[in-house]
Length: 119
Picture (cartoon, rainbow, N blue to C red):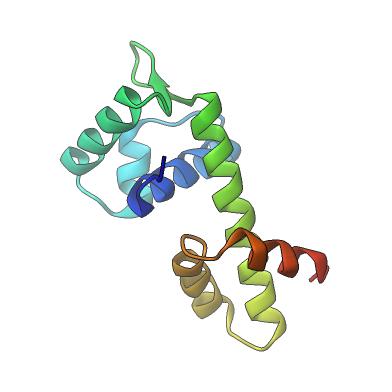
């Protein structure tokens, strides 16, 4: 099943915020992405209903196995693409923005070939 780019971005953000702070709430995601709380709430409901995340009674979000797998994959792509772009002279800011776009469309074959370059 193909997951939407926006869902991948939410899952990646949840993973990064959890790595940084040890916990994630919807408000943290809204602040990080500069989205409204209502938009994030709708997205979290969809991710929860599709089994990508769970949320406890205090509003803390946890990635379920399939959500974690997607988030780790997207984050790995993001980091490698950012590094590759910086290596060829792209500024960090532009490399980060471009990597965020590319991480969703790059084929597994191309990504694996880039990984093998040991950038």
